[in-house]
Length: 116
Image 1 (cartoon, helix red, strand yellow):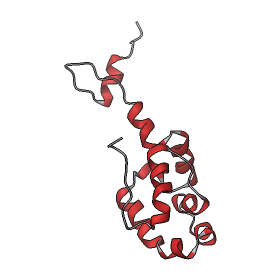
Image 2 (tube, rainbow, N blue to C red; image 1 turned 30 degrees about the vertical axis):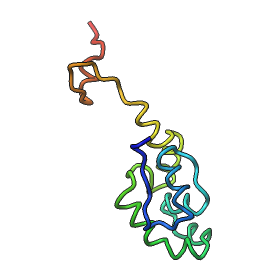
Image 3 (cartoon, rainbow, N blue to C red; image 1 turned 90 degrees about the horizontal axis):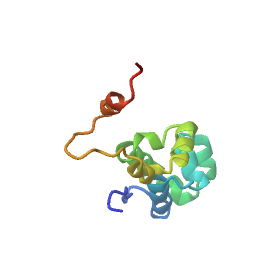
Image 4 (cartoon, rainbow, N blue to C red; image 1 turned 180 degrees about the vertical axis):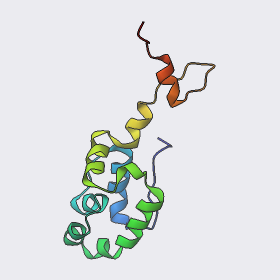
């Protein structure tokens, strides 16, 4: 899928695949990445290897500047992201747009049945 997020060299190479799978498909990452995504510094440091620890600044910078805001920041956000299957599910769940019209979120409310 061409709309998938690709992680760049700011993130240690051995973490890129897990982070991409998490963001794009909601696949649970390893303990270190999960702790970082949940904004749990103490847990992340306790779970890190030397390479991950050395790359933490770049990883956090990439998350802050590039990752969808709904996929990181708290344990609740991470659980919801995994449950929702990441970006791939968001693309599949877009509401259909009738031909010849422009979809806006308000369009749903306008098309709902109104009580009589």
